[in-house]
Amino acid sequence: MLANFFIGLREGLEATLVVSILVAYLVRSGRKERLAPVWLGVGLAVAVSLAFGAVLSFTSARMSFEAKEAFGGILSITAVGFVTWMIFWMRRAARSLRTELQGKVDAAVGWLALAVTAAIAVGREGLETSLFIWTAVQASGQTTTPLIGAALGIACSIVLGWLLYNRALRLNLARFFTWTGAALIIVAAGVLAYGVHDLQEAGILPGLTGLAFDVSAQVPPGSWYGTLLKGVLNFSPASTWLEVIVWLAYVATVMPLFFLPARVPAAATAATSNTTSTTSSTTTSA
Image 1 (spheres, rainbow, N blue to C red):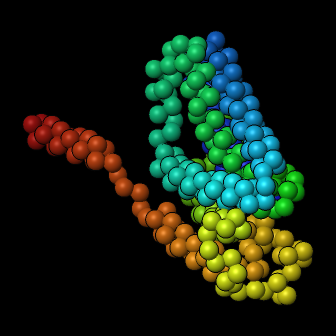
Image 2 (image 1 turned 90 degrees about the vertical axis):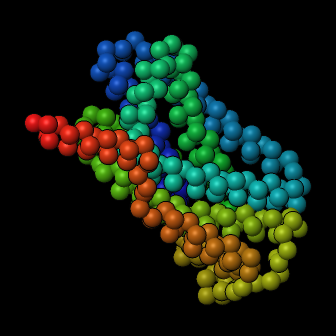
Image 3 (image 1 turned 90 degrees about the horizontal axis):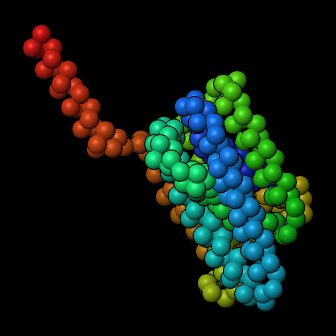
């Protein structure tokens, strides 16, 4: 539940921020009549995301064991790819998100264009969330706990978005997305290892019987702490060597890259240099 709460909170807050920025800009620029297509786009994005999750569940239910394991493994690895891209993108775009969206609103003068802008902006997070939560449900043994955790996270994100919109709350978004991103890297590593195990179960990858460790006696899968480790970190008491290697390689590669200082775009550096030069020239002339 906790891991999927983070997923719902982070992805939901991204979508909520997008919607609140679009709504605030339209209201403050005197274009309240353009709000309807924005809400239509949001509704379509939510509907498509829910339908995507339903299609995944229906498709996997009609497969054989090997096909289901292969399907789940491939989608788990795909989900990790999307989440990894998402945390890096949001870390980079958090500061410029408002300006970028306002530029899109100015360009999207038509009713349909506004609806499409809102649908794409929200739908991206919705599809990523559906895919990640679906993999979490498969990993947890078809229980509803991941869905409850994600729903609570999304609900909290909506409340936070509303408070931010009404300026009742100030939140350092760059810091928020940095630390939640670090937490999601650990979660994604567990999902990646689970996906690899699924592919081993399907016979696509080797090493199913080669265990790196087996601590099932010390950490029973049915115990509260075993369930907690499984739900948060996707920890398996009996992990294969390939699972362990993939988990370590992912964390050791992605975590340092994530905490590297963000590079200043060349265009921004050039603009700063030009501004400095102009200021210096003006001062000299004076």
